[in-house]
Image (tube, rainbow, N blue to C red; front, top):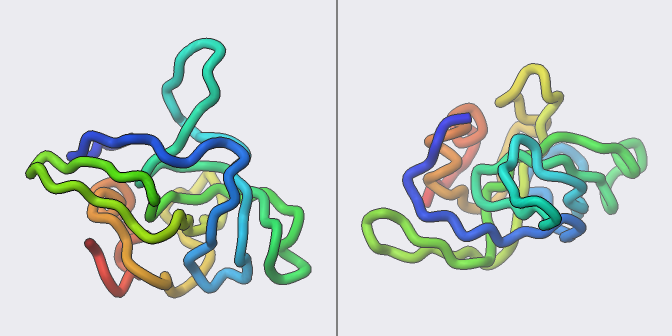
Length: 135
């Protein structure tokens, strides 16, 4: 996985309820695990901006509920620092659902609601192409 140019504070725990920021049919999802994350023994994994996570759909269309999908974190409330010295935080935590794990960078939806962090564009360019605003 490609590195990002920020000192990332991980702000989303496993079990956190986050918003789905695309038009895939999911509204609220729960983070189940962090994919390709590096952690410490006996410590629960956390996710930050531009990390891939597995999510379970809690609210949304009936055919999407109770299913597990891979997703990319595009916003987090927890403040993090960029190498330019500026600190970034968003109003909510949000993810974008992917079609499957094998063909990465294929979002389920066709639009992304709200801004997307610049670090997502560095790591997942296909996801950032759908965004109207990249901050």
